Image (cartoon, rainbow, N blue to C red; front, side, top):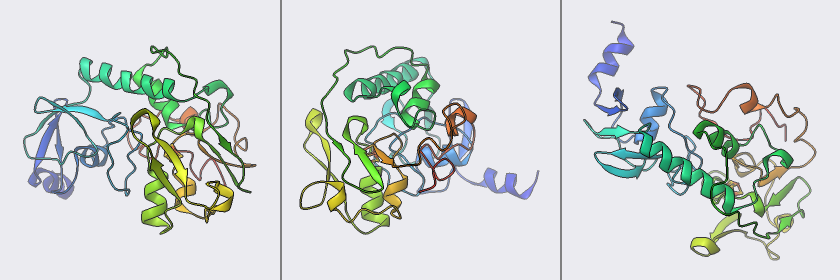
Length: 251
Ligand code: SF4
């Protein structure tokens, strides 16, 4: 047994789908699973960003309770199920609800193949929308010289809100309203992105997991079919960066 295995054996651990996951106190179920190379589907979680628990895609059953893996602290001898049939069905329903809540038309989307929502849907085996499509009519904000903000594609994950606040120190984005009326808003005199302090150098410019914060002039640099999730499905071990990233887009 090598030093790394000895160190892992000395750490507390919980059970995830029958396997043992070592963790460091303070880690969440998600943190520990990803560190151990076990993928739990997620959209609003990003390593290094404050846990949020808003998308609910990472639903697991922990000691009999359905919880979000990204916000639940790992504890010794916790018994967690992520791949049980009913949990997978619950997760699939969450993804299907995300699809019909906005306008996610994958074949016509500039980020097809590099979109985490699309990739998670493939991972979960989604074949149909299942629920009635809402087709909301939302604004497309094309006021910024380097980005388009398409509210039709926003899944309200708040990754841009957290990145702008915590990494950029700007608070360009926020969520307004509650429930079905929730929407992303921009802090500027007009409410438009082009009148805000948002910059292509911001961390918030690189976190959107879907095509809502869309960089101009770059999205077809890599053809559909050869993009991030075209090359490697999202469930592959080590794939914890579900977003349109610098590898695919040079801002
Ligand atoms: S614009 Fe993108 S990053 Fe921001 S909340 Fe919407 S989906 Fe999330």
